[in-house]
Image 1 (cartoon, rainbow, N blue to C red):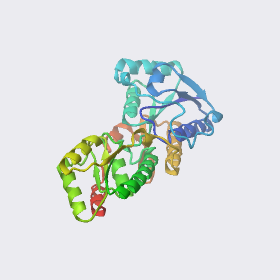
Image 2 (cartoon, rainbow, N blue to C red; image 1 turned 120 degrees about the vertical axis):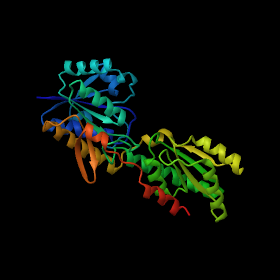
Image 3 (cartoon, helix red, strand yellow; image 1 turned 135 degrees about the vertical axis):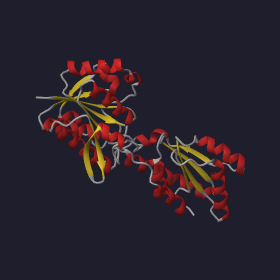
Image 4 (tube, rainbow, N blue to C red; image 1 turned 180 degrees about the vertical axis):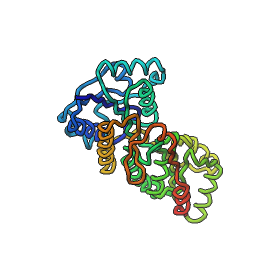
Length: 319
């Protein structure tokens, strides 16, 4: 019987528990012993392993967070730590490691593969910004969380004839801000990929007011501006005081949507099937309607930028 281990790493994302559950149950079904590693690569370096059975993952499919816990492990960038981790996996007789997380987590999995450890990465991040896949587990849930919050902010903004600034996650990519902006009717969306100076923002607000608009939502991805920087500039230039809401970690929590829970199950099934077929050192990615096992080197070449059409549509619909 072969042994596989699972860890969740980096920022948590709704649907990670659903993925852990599916990996454990599908893995056992296919004849594997399955082990969980607590707190990501940090727990791996400490040898924090536990064997998991079907009952251990009961009742977690609709829970946010991750039962395996997670952490960011800066020291794992050191080759000496990667070598140590590989030796720990060999000592525990682990035949393959499945990592659930974002780009940094995949980088760790790739590093271990270079140490001779077979690895597979399942994409899990609310930012939806990983190379090699059009979709990451957690994005849909976070998107719905943002849209729900902004709909409430819109109510009070309308009541006060006010401008509201809403900051969402997205340090390097604005997928969450753009999709949320489309879904909730934001007047402006500021993202890292499409730099917009704050004079342009102020002019847009002037034009909107002149056209009879009495309230506006400005969606700001954290990688574009700090929301209070936007506030200060608007306040100084237009002599108005927008409200500011930083949604923060609210976006990472909550039960996964049906899409995230089902995608987690399907990607996990594909991961176990890949291992069973002797395929590893790959990312489980969504391309169109297909879930594929994509070699890491190929995954790194596949980028999914912000759609120009979607971004431009926000401005059209905000008029």
